[in-house]
Image (cartoon, rainbow, N blue to C red; front, top):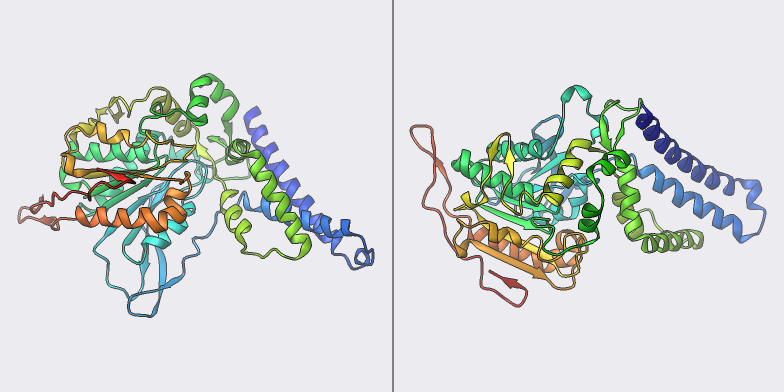
Length: 440
């Protein structure tokens, strides 16, 4: 019960700060106060505006904001977000472009369940939408999931991916971003063993901790320093009475956000100070660079406790994926069973979350995969966010990923007369020659 009280206390603090910001903004804009010609009034109003907006965003799920785009025919086409497969902890959604014939590239974008909503990949989706049929894993906020729905750990996450891939069919190309990279690799290996005809055509892993010990970071060091008992005692709380998931054990989003900010506290402090000054000078706008970034960054979701704890214990501490010892629902998963799915890894040279070396370790685990089906790319000068949503992604990485998808698309897999999925002669093309930034 004390953890439920702690959860409600954090929400109370957030709500209070939002109220303080709104009060300061309202008071400073009151006509009588406007008669006082003092710059502190403007500063107070600016502080209130930035504070209210920041704390308000922490409990609101951002909208995808992808309403239309111009297609090759020169016309603007509407985009709708449709739910393809609905599950208690996450849905498979499809970005359908109305009036456009389906694109041959069918891409499943696996979003992380690491504190932020899938909308964190908005710019990634936007950049791929003109050339692909885009499907995304849209994970739910654990605070809104009733306890009656049961647990959700990394094995359940993996089985969700298996279900999504079976639903989409074998002519799918998967792009996993950050945290889900090792579990997406495991899901592909699981299908290779249990349902080979449902395997995707290609798998692109972007900045994921396949082998966290390959290149230690602050994240991996933290995982090594603390015990599971310490994590469970300090990080896990019960959802309060305000939400549908009351009583569910979670790693609260507000607590995660505090951890995110503490990693670069000085940078964030400077960013908010500068924004307050810009608002005071009348130079800020509703959708300026600061607001676009922090509206997404501050929007956090609660993570199921069992998912968070099993990730730390089995992926980081136990290195079950790195040592090819992962078990899903009682089935030992052998990553070496992947023999036909092309695998590409993408890393950023300045990534301080999943440092270079952690993700490319996946290629060594794919012992059954021919060399021509493996590829890797190291983006010089790119940080963690940049390799899937920044300029590096748009200008360099995205074209390479699309080229990799096309090189390994092969002939469509068809359904035989007996009802079994049969694979036409699969393409076995190299994923491009190595360059200074890319090595196969």
